[in-house]
Image (cartoon, rainbow, N blue to C red; front, side, top):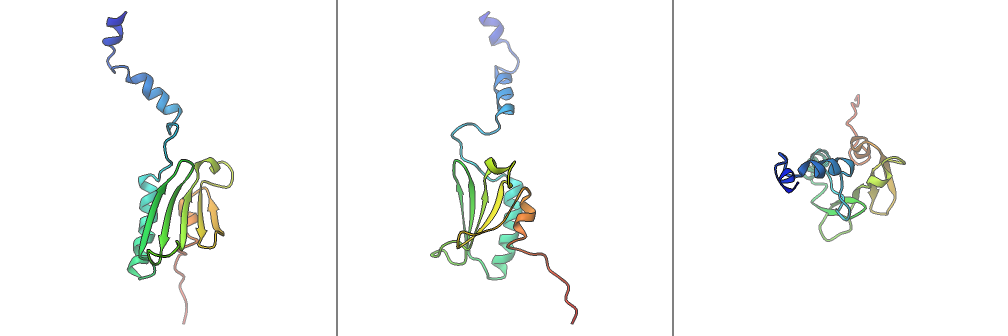
Amino acid sequence: MADAEEKEPSGGRANHLALAALNPKPPNQPTTFVRRELNEILQIYGRKVADGEWRDYAIDHLREEAVFSIYRRSSEVPLYRIVKEPRLARRQGAYAVVAATGRILKRGHALGSVLRAIDPPLKLVDA
C-alpha cells in the first residue's frame, strides 16, 4: 500500500490542489490586492503624481481587508483609502473609496467604477 502512495504521479498534490480550489484563501492569511487591481489603482496614482496632486502611498494587507492609502504628503493622514473587503462582496460590494474624514465616497462590486470617485472621466467643455 505504501508503494502505491509513493508512485502517485502528482506526489500527493492532487488532494492539495482540490482543497485549494474549494478555499482560495487559506485561513489566517491576509487579504491582498491582485495584480489587475493594483494595475488599475497605480494607473490613477501615477497620473495624479505626475499632476503633482499626490506624493506617497501605503499598502496594508490585513486579515479582513486590504487598504491602499494615498497621501498628499507622507506626514499627513491619507487623503483617500481604497479598501478591499471580500466579506462584503455579496452585499454592498468588496471595494470602497474612503475620504480622510472617514466618509465612504463610493462602494461597489467593480473596482473601476469605484475608482471614478477619485478620478472622474474628463468632459469636453465648449468654450
